[in-house]
Length: 146
Image (cartoon, rainbow, N blue to C red; front, side, top):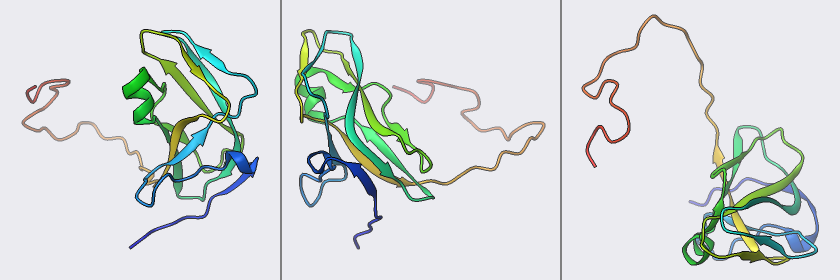
């Protein structure tokens, strides 16, 4: 069963997010820039997408990396996944970082990230004196094995 939500957007028709295939989970976001952006190794920059979206209450949009950019060039989304809350109305931007060994150039219109949608469940926080113990207890990173 296919589930859909309606996302309203403003911006250029050239910038509307698009699903590459019928099985794509994420819709591609493109760079809405006039001139190429050069990312030196280790550098990061906020790249505009040219769109604003209206996410329905009870959902969030997530900005995630494109695997091809990461695998081929070491370029990824710095705050991955980036969350777009349902009450945000500003332009969607993507913070790209170059973890690769050479400069990477983002060209106008390049696919730079993908946009996914997820339901949001809000927690209710209640103070208690202590929490229940488990076998793992306070063991942190790597405590259950490699």
